[in-house]
Amino acid sequence: MSARNLAEPSATQKWIAGVLVVIYALITILPLLWILSTGFKTQVDAIAYPPKIFFEPTLEGYVNLFTTQTRQSEEYLINNPPTNWYERIVNDKGMVIAGPSRFGERFLNSVIIGFGSTFLSVFLGTLAAYAFSRFRVPLKEDLLFFILSTRMMPPIAIAIPIFLMFRTLGLSDTHAGMILLYTAVNLSLAVWLLKGFIDEIPLEYEEAALIDGYTRLQAFIKVVLPQATTGIASTAIFCLIFAWNEYAFAVLLTSGTAQTAPPFIPSIIGVSGLDWPAVAAGATLFLVPVMVFTILLRKHLLRGITFGAVRK
Picture 1: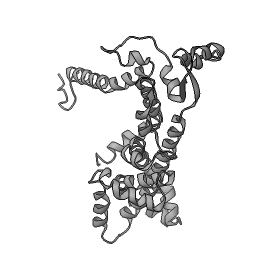
Picture 2: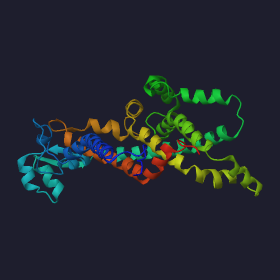
Picture 3: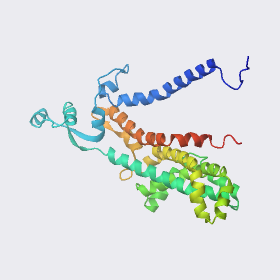
């Protein structure tokens, strides 16, 4: 009879681990499912107590999210019947569509600022990480600790100085100002993560490229960057998540032109107060870009987290 490998889990252990993973997945995904379902409820169903699990779905929340509405008299509604399905939804509440809402603009601002700051953070972080990894930088350890120290306090702790600086420089409520701010906050994370990945790339690869006649820049582009793709992808995901979800600076430093979706979504007001279906619809749509970005890079993310964990 062959001895069982002690390092290999038994069938019972695998079954228990699978059950725990399923339970954990259900617990973590339940709030997302609740937000998703609330986006398809009416205002009455959204605030019903006890909460309604089964309901008749409607697109009222999404219509409220993308439109501004005003109340009109019954005579006006009779003389101006709806011409499409979303006008019919609005007219059933005794209102008419006055125009589009600003959610589209705020969502576009999030895309520009989030992806713009992520690109800058990864680009500058890759260059800085390569320099720290490959060259003899004076006071390297002190500089790395200084870069890391910028993450030791919550960003909101320096909100007032940044507000005064942005007001003086004319960067308040601008896309450029928010991109620069989020880049500065994310840069320390990018440098430290990418330095660890580049340290794992053997130096002999670059030396062989230099012997073959490549310049240092060519060796960096053609040898180092392809090897560091995993680290760049995982770093980009973490930087994007911070810039995409950031709320405090967006509230303090933006109000109109460059305001992003996080401070706009909670301010959606309906006829009877906070419009929860519209808020849930906005939150659902707000999750989509980061979710798609993460799914596209999920293989790199998994490899990036475990890269360097096991050495031969």
